[in-house]
Amino acid sequence: MADIRHEQKSIRVDVPVRAAYDQWTQFETFPQFMEGVERVQQLDPAHLHWKAKIGGQAVEWDAEIVEQEPDERISWRSQGGVYNAGTVTFTPDGPGRTLVTLRLDFEPEGVLQKTGDALGFVSRRIEGDLEKFKKFIEERGQPTGSWRGRIMQGVVVGDDGMNLP
Image (tube, rainbow, N blue to C red; front, side, top):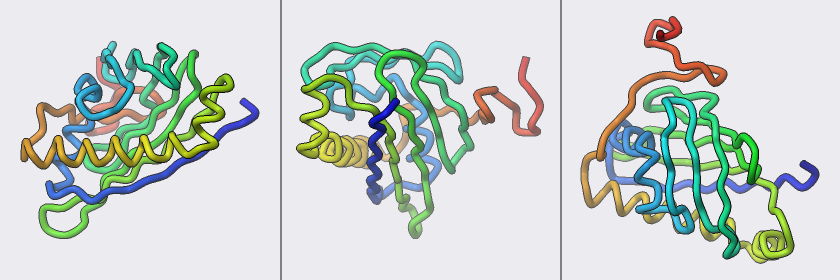
């Protein structure tokens, strides 16, 4: 991985931290607000399978959630396929408001992706996806579901830090 790129964007959403966080844990809804994402399948609490179009090319990859702390952050990394890793954080920003910050680390593959990155497409896509997330959760006013478990170093743990069966 020689050419890792980094993008970070934030947006304020007019819902409490818990609502914003709980909605983000509903990975299978991502196609409703993330451009190019066709399907996200949650294989288990810590593993996802993604199907997307990047630069017009169909791509698939698996991702592992390496850290998840309710109402604070979710961090992931890809496992094979398109390299990407990142963290989304949720910070209280006044009564009933949340600052959502998304940091994405990625490696563009091929001429189309490298050209798109050079032209700022990734940065604009992240901004657009955050805007769509804002609209999605604010219009609903409540999440479509939630998962309140914790993940540390890729292992699902209970509230008391004990491994779940």
